[in-house]
Image (tube, rainbow, N blue to C red; front, side):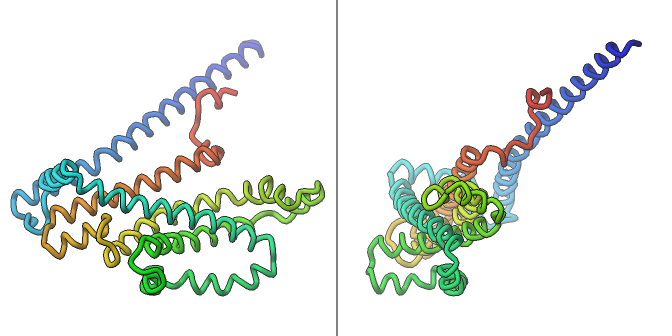
Length: 287
């Protein structure tokens, strides 16, 4: 066999190996998707069966069929939409405000050492304080308005994002900053072209953590300081012993939490595509 033939054989074997690996990865993705869809369906079926045979008390644990029926009724009369929009509005306003302020504070503290030294101990102490614990103070200041509910969410998001942003800035290699300053990258240019891109992975991690926390906080706030919203729906239905309605609220809250987290993940894929490029792609592997 000549050298040219040997090279051609090895190239063919490499192409075959790449094809096999690509097909294997596609099969694994299809399997993972199937498991993700099948698992909740199986759990719901087991729940329905357990309630039907009496393993679970259907008066306390309403079966999925009864929950779905109650949810359809609430959608039809518009009451569920009112609670959903109330919660989503507070969640969106608080999350956006807290995220913007958290990123800005983390960037400033990461760059300006005196500010970091002055604020870090205070922020650390405030972060450990349960955010729902400051709700009475906010209600005392702003009364029974939308402001304390939004602020409670914004404050909880702020500290998570600020801490992660600061950590992202502190992890930047000092040589990168020296090179940036050597090329006269200061002020806004330093923020936009060096600091923000370098800290972006940590910021996105903070946003993902804050997304789940914000849903928890807004629900807890609505338990005690609201006459609408999903938190109010859950608490009020418990007081009235309406478990099907309560489960409707719980399920919708979990769906909203999943959607918010999914949006953050989607945003991360758009802004940081290199973090999700580890899966083998046939065309790239053949290069």
